[in-house]
Structures are given as C-alpha cells and as structure tokens.
Image 1 (cartoon, rainbow, N blue to C red):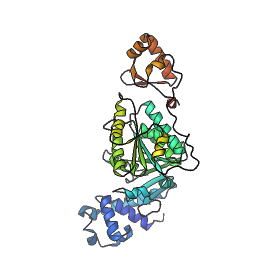
Image 2: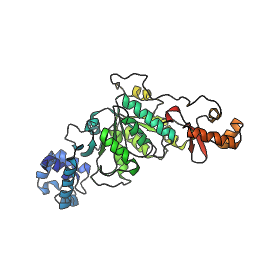
Image 3: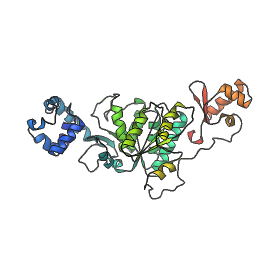
Image 4: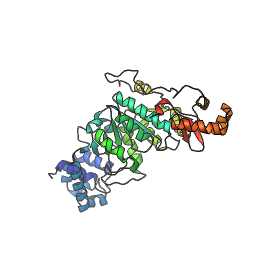
Length: 369
C-alpha cells in the first residue's frame, strides 16, 4: 500500500496519546500543516506539547495505529477528512472545537449538504418514533440531510426517515467508526454506510464510553443548520445536543407533547427557554431562513394529526393522553373485560399502544406501519 505522507502526518498527530485536539490545532496554527509540524525539532514542539505526548509522538504504538488508519482509509467507501480538506464540513469550522480529523464511511458528499439534526429519547414511545420518522422523511424529501447519533429510539427513527428521501442521513458515532453501538442498530448502520454516511472523530477501535457521547453531540448539532428534539426527559442527553446547538448559533426546535408524559417535559422546557414549537415539517422549513430547495411544494409536509379511524367506540373516549383501563371503563360505560378486549383489538390493528404502568395511548395515522 502506498502511504500518503500528508495523511499519515495527520494520523500521527491525532493518534498521539495526550495530544488533545486543542493542542493539535495550536500546533497547526504555529507551524502549518502536520508534515511541517513533524519536521520541526522536538525541542521546538515542547512548548505546545505535554512531555508524555512528546515522548509518544514517534513511538511504535503510534506508528502501528497510523498504519491501521491508512489501511482502513484505503478501503472502498472509506475516507479520512482533515481540517485542510475541501470536503471538511464548513459548518464545523464555525464551532469552537472542530475535530482535526474525521473518519467517514459512505457518501462523503453529504457533508456539504444543508442538514437538520433530529434527536430525542432512547426510550421513545411508538408515537414519538413515528413522529420522528415522519418529520425526517418529509425533510429529507425537501432536500435536508438528517443528522443524528445512531442511538435507539428517536435517533434510529430519524435515520430511517432520512434514508427514505434524497437528503439521506448522517450518523455521528460516539465510538470508533469500526465499532457499532448499540449493536441492535448494526443493520441500520450498514444501511447508512451504503446509502448515507457514518462519521466519527474517535480513533479506530474506540469502545463506548460515557464521556465520548457529549463530544459526539456537539458534532451532531455542529453539522446542522438547526436541531429538532422529539421526545426528551428533563435529564436527557438530547438536551445537551440542543444546548450545544443554541451555543453554536443554530435554530432549536421542539415537538410538544402531553403534559402528563415525562418524555414531553424536556421538549416543553426547551420551548419555555426559547426553542421554536413545531407541529409539522413545514414549520421547520419556514424557520430555516432561505432554505427552500427547487421543486419543494409547501403541501409536502409531515402529515398533521388525523385520527387513525373515525372517533367512534372506545377510541373516541381515549383522547391523546395515556389512560388506564379503569378510566376508560368510566368514560365509555363498559366493563373491564369489554375494554380490555377492545384495547387488544385496537393494539393489534396498530391504533393503540400499550405503555408501562398499565396505560394505553391512542396512535395517530402516521404511527401505523
């Protein structure tokens, strides 16, 4: 394999233990591109590089890691995107700590597209996942690339929706790009690698670690023009992404929910603090100033709420908030056996979802797959 000395230099600096991305950027500012940095005497670098990192810079472990990185990047569909590349996302250059190097697998051209981040709870309700997928599909059809973090729940639904339109989707990983987490999304990750894009700033082989995911979140928001939160508890990682988006000067959007749902409280808190309340994809597109790709029709939006069926029988008594069997018995004037039987039928038909705690919730039309 013919090694690219420039790319090898980027890898050598980024893979040196103890050399933070911030320190690497300072070296670049002081001495120029990585090849120029590495051509300097080590004594010249000592002012900007910690002693332990300076000792590791030319070590065998770092050289082996560089070789692995070059071997990985030589495979079809793989790429290393550096701060000096034309393909480096322009929006990431606006954040305070852009990663010097990105590992990319898939359609690198998506990094140049206008994008929207969609994030939310890992423990999403069926309705929340359906909403996220519907928003993502419609926004992808309008030309926006959907960015999320490959987590369970809302993230996964957003990626699925993004893949259904020409905007496609970008998954930002909190692990090495060769480590898929969670494993339950391995098939989805494979599909994104084929038709969308996987990216990571972490070295190959980096395992899941709690402190990596907040770093991942700033890239999710940094790549996008705005961030939409669909279902989030008050102590949700999604709110970290939303805060990062606000700090980066991005628009923040939130989908409201039931006042009784813990997964709506995070969205409601965002709205109280200035996030834009949205009920449709059109609401998002209207707020993203200047974004209206050719061929987009204003009627192409995430369908507004419609009843799955006519409001007759038990469904008419459910409303849109979670409800228990006893309350339904009282409202409908039916026995517990009659209500339970009807709920089972509605659940099998995709019109009702069973929730923890013996509660049931009516599903909108978009929730039916």
